[in-house]
Length: 225
Picture (cartoon, rainbow, N blue to C red):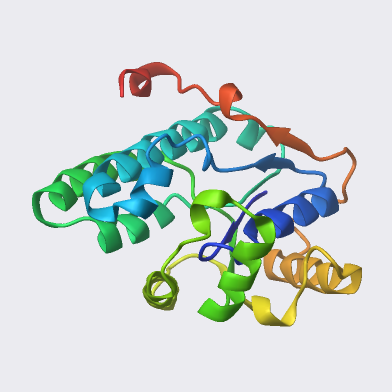
């Protein structure tokens, strides 16, 4: 079983990812965010650092997800807090002209090599809720984020999932507190189980574990990227 939790910045992806992994006895795959050396300066000077930020994310996410495809994904269940296509959503928003063309070539080359999830849980929220949750988690480089950026990001996520061809469960994050309300978390877990179907979901038999970034070095051909 391969489940992905996706949505805009601050919506609660990682909290729900951990809850689902415990429910299904799955491994947790978390995106590398704070290790991106260009991210803090991107929020200060987005036009100057957008390309560096996006290429770092593209390659680090590809390495993580390719390692899953080659190994642990087929030996057990995985719940991830990002979809590879999220990178393209951000790049289309942040990059222009020749930089976007170069990025798009890289993305189109890498994307077909990765396994597709059995289910994507799309957490949607309005920008005011996102801002409050961003403030609560306290990442310093996110505190000056322009609300207009979140408005546009939410619009692009909505557009992407209107045409998404895979299995997707839409959840309004405004209705749920995955951190402070056990009943909310249990309800969402039940909805996810229903969306997956009983033939896909097996009872949790092992404690959830987290896949660390240093465990996700690519193998074979992709090692040169």
